[in-house]
Length: 356
Ligand code: NAD
Image 1 (cartoon, protein in one colour):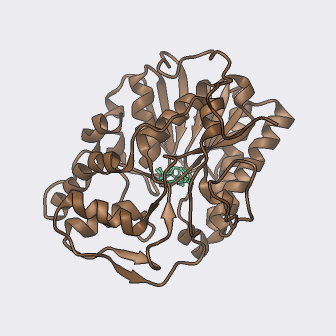
Image 2 (cartoon, protein in one colour):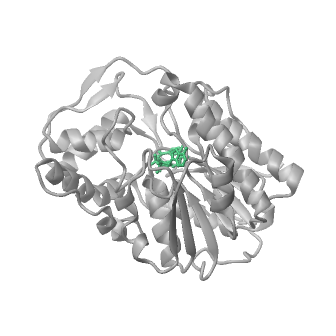
């Protein structure tokens, strides 16, 4: 068996398409008005792609696409993944599908599991079927580190998953199983990306299901203590959004032999919530230390990705360390803080240069 920890001898076959060149290619980004999706849209437009977005704006924002909307070859389709006909319209004429749309958040899936399954599983089946019917070249879809579930092994390696511990985690595991079936039954090329705690500009601190980094930034900028669920020793592998975008472009252009499975996408470093809170307070300036609440059900204690497969078979290497990624994110949160103080919401595309 191959040494999984060694990536010193890349086994990548030549790519049919370079990740930096999508000139004239027709692509669909589902969830393209969301956090990760909108950065991917910008990157694809910058590389010359003709981009269509399907999004129902349930969590995404039109202003995330304000730059993209000025591009000649950009098309926004407001619609829902749960409608098969909408997915067919979205996939028509498209060669690459980047499926990012989903209802994120473990707590949301605990509160309303049926809707999380309807969007994340049935919606994904609709997208895969529409991509098949449109004859799409490849589908790259968002999975999640949550598929590792109750496995306590670190680092998390593909092939060593535990049992899912939340409806959200199960929905992403089911997406991976769907992808396997679409690959084996219909000969499609699909690649899943198991994102580990992605962060960066445009990630929203609003709403009950906001992620930890936006919440910590907002608390620090308001000079309030951030809330940590549990004692704060739990660790995460925080991934800058520019690296998640790079992984999508690499997966879309990787040799066919790399298809038919999912890969970890992360920074490859573990940070506790206490360390994260300290780093954000240092970047923002003076801010009070965090307060602690009860642990949240469904949360995993520790997370750290093994990136050897993603490195060897996709050519993925994380390029932004946490401190740098946080520095590139702070202006976004300062802008939002200004908005709260009465100014107009800033156009987040102003942060485009920050994600490269
Ligand atoms: P996001 O909420 O910002 O983006 C998701 C987008 O999907 C939103 O624009 C939303 O409006 C859209 N959407 C939701 N339901 C829809 C529906 N029924 N029809 C059409 N559009 C719909 O989330 P994100 O953080 O950008 O996450 C993107 C993907 O990555 C998701 O699949 C998520 O599960 C996955 N993921 C994210 C992270 C992370 O840390 N951000 C970690 C693991 C996995």
